[in-house]
Image (cartoon, rainbow, N blue to C red; front, side, top):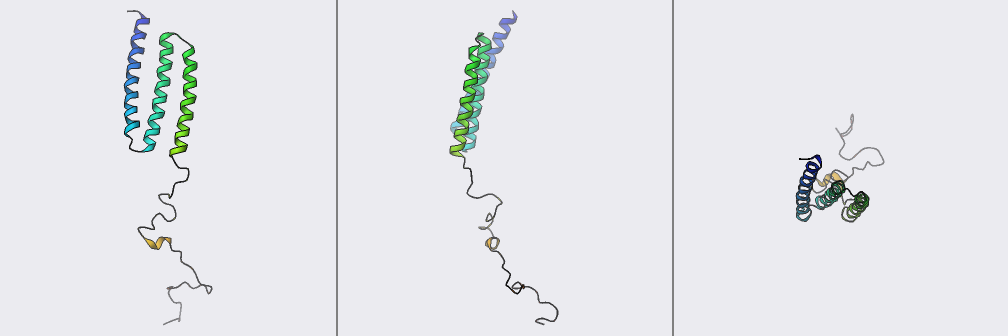
Length: 132
């Protein structure tokens, strides 16, 4: 067995493995369950296709395929940015621990205690000699 034949077998096995992984990511892209899973799987598919193109360029000895891989990388990157911009909101409706996050559980969290002009808060304990 020559070295060229060994590399051909190695590259063919790697391409077969990548094609199985691309199918697995395609299932994840369709199945979900969240939109971020779908976007990440599309990004992974793009990365694996770029790797397959680069391996094919080395296997076939065609250098122009590397230019195709670079162009595909740019298109894949821009498409993932566009998907993320469309489907993931820039400002979420409410944060997990921001103001008002616990208002459904404890309504007292959204009330702010106001201090009257005389500086004594309502319900504050009386000082020396006051009210006793």
